[in-house]
Length: 385
Image 1: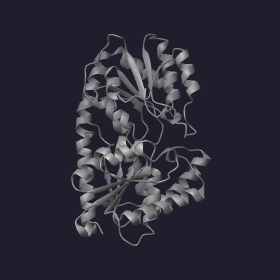
Image 2 (image 1 turned 120 degrees about the horizontal axis):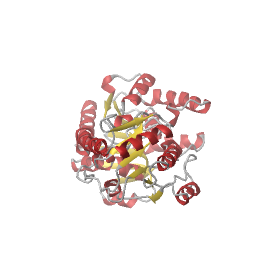
Image 3 (image 1 turned 45 degrees about the horizontal axis):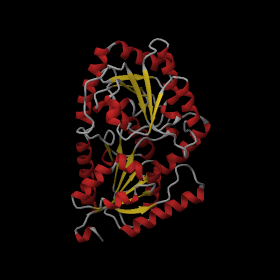
Image 4 (image 1 turned 180 degrees about the vertical axis):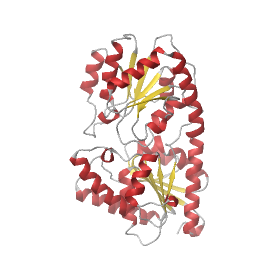
């Protein structure tokens, strides 16, 4: 076994490669730097060779983005079990809902005690919605969590206190079973705080996966209302439709908003620091089951005033009234009023941005996030040994 040879090994089990790169790569790189043998197991899109070139072992796991039927999901759990038994890791780090649930269930059938880190990056739609289908799914998910999180050696990492409270109750977690780490961190040397450039007027930006639950429709309606008073305000939308998700925004809708003069659409961008530097206000009116949205952490680091919702996770990314404004979910009128308030009060907007940068330095520095994870890894592995 690797640990008996003095080699610590870790396997990251994640739904898809691009999410791993955007949310967990710095942690894995530091683990490798400290002598861990690192395996990335996920559904690969286009980053497999890139990760292999970084020195990681890579294994494909056929996660589906949506339900693929009971037998297919069971096959995925069996596949995860086989991968874990072959890799023989010192520790398993599962990230997001399906990997956490399926990895926990797979580990229940392995006799050896392998410590598990379960990263809860938001509990998703089922724990916030109130319709009948969501309630049924929530009941099933709760049962799965109860089983999946009964590992003897585990740490459940939460990004916000709301998710912490829900799963602590569902899975009967003890204080020693969990940790709170707000988000996946941001590189403060890349996301710099720059003074606003108002020469082209006020720019408001929303950057996200283009899903209905992210509040895209509310953003569009708010933009229409704001433009009735401030026609020259530019509203930017960044991101692409998620074609595998039934709740995606359609490209035809985006085209209609652009043609109607409501927004300017930037599509996918790899230069978010530049996009934020060229903007004045960052919005995310999400009612999705967020952890702590990375885009809001990045906005704070860039020194931009934020408008988001009082949804769990979103509200944890700001200090309401200090670094940004929280509005009720699904309330385009309240969103429009908040935008108008920041358009009209440049001093408030700039002070919020400055305090947001300080908040990011205190709470969201990626170096701190990486250090906390490596400490959890070492403590868990030493407990088992």
